[in-house]
Length: 405
Image (cartoon, rainbow, N blue to C red; front, side, top):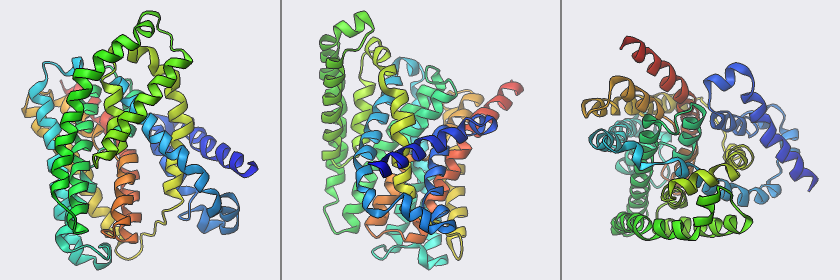
């Protein structure tokens, strides 16, 4: 218990304390600082500088106690982001939003696939033991195409865009992005492991049926069950219990389809009637973001050893270019589809966000033997780099274009 409490104080206090330092908070989202702190407390920094202290603070036997908190953090955080998603904000922007959703997946994924194809030959140690050249290229393409929905939601809130058209469109595109991503991951793992590629098709069909069911059946049901909350604006302990059960069932549904639980959690939040969402959003959001989420980042950081020697630096540079530039370029079709230049730039900057979902995908690819330990470390660093760029790109670039107008 004493060790767990020491870990808790360090995991929660260190990133938040750093983020509160003037310039750090202005330039970086809290999630990026939490990610960096997780890596710093792992073997990449603390384990290298003070291995004995690292082993005493985070002995392997103690890490199992963190797993439940990690899963809870991911699901609840995705739910809280869904609460901010309001389709009314993107009505009238159908063409712009549709083009953005498609291009934000296709362009960076293609760029990452070409990068992975080249890396397979140029850096032989980049591929995992079970990866052929096409499989490795596809894996890197998927990794480059990720936009981390939960972390993006935190960035959108920190920038005050949660109720702005740009913020809502970015979250909607990220939700589409992540759904397409998990279908692609399911297909890739099925092909790589000799499974049934049709399972990905069933996952895609199941996802559409699930969303339809949530909108047509669950949303009206929620209005009736929580009519008292909408009227009073107050959430009782019983309401919290019912919401938690519904959230768990929704996340379980998408997890069972071969998608990630985070998709179901987001959809459950997104279908909440607006008055209900506004009433419950403040009940636990800060606790989840500031207290629970750091446990996820520390769990990844403790498993990651970043070494940019050899071909790792090449992997980092190539995939950073594919991921960041790919997302920025993907906003150009949105501009031609009806968004203003400023909105398109800000959307491209926001969609560079990696973070949590990127780390989940990389872990799956590494566990399947499709990427090597060298690539895993380089790609974790790429995810941190892209997440750190998100806020400056969206804010500074957006201001520059607004000034030109």
